[in-house]
Image (cartoon, rainbow, N blue to C red; front, side):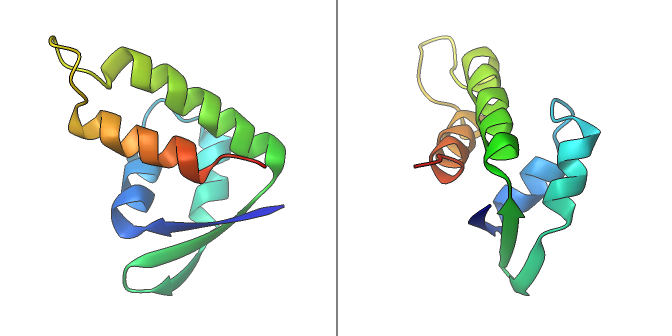
Length: 87
């Protein structure tokens, strides 16, 4: 199991993302709220890998504008890819 700290914006982005399967949304919603701005997520390596793959696909589709500059969603996705990295 891996523990991942999510800020409130990351948490909201994840639970509202339609590209994430409902089973993984349930895993994310099972996180413990540490304080007003932080959530602690306990997640299996397999689920973390699956989410990273989904973030990477989403980054390719929506992470860059027409000039290949990173969009706001792209920045969020890059941060999430780093957070969900399994050593």
